Amino acid sequence: MKTVKQRIQKRRKFTEEFKLHIVREFESGKFSVKELSILYRIPLTNLYRWIYKYSTTEEYGYRVVELKNSSYMKINDLQKEIKQLKEMLADKQIKIELLEKQIELAEKRHNIDIKKKKSMRPLSGSKNTGKKEGLQ
Image (cartoon, rainbow, N blue to C red; front, side, top):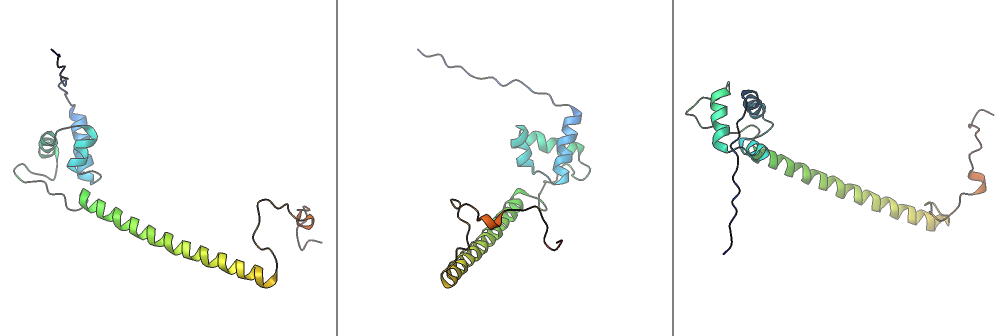
């Protein structure tokens, strides 16, 4: 017969300062109630009780509706930003490909190497002599 071990969670007691800190974080719009619950591992009922008790804007008996900085809106904003960044990346990639094609055509037309090759050593005339141009 197997023995089943149950993990008993100890009862936690939160200070008034901690509760006020949590309520301030909610009121500032940095976090939603759900995010605070996950972040601090505090049940939603406790958070709502603290908000009604310590908040200067929320009243007991009214449901807290997060519109301005809700997690849904944050997710939408982040998705829009990701879309914009992907578009910018695609534009930059097209520009890079265009410039590489221009370099390739110029190399063929003028019969010279424009791109630096990693394996090539610098030409003897390309050394830095320490003199600045226009000072001689």
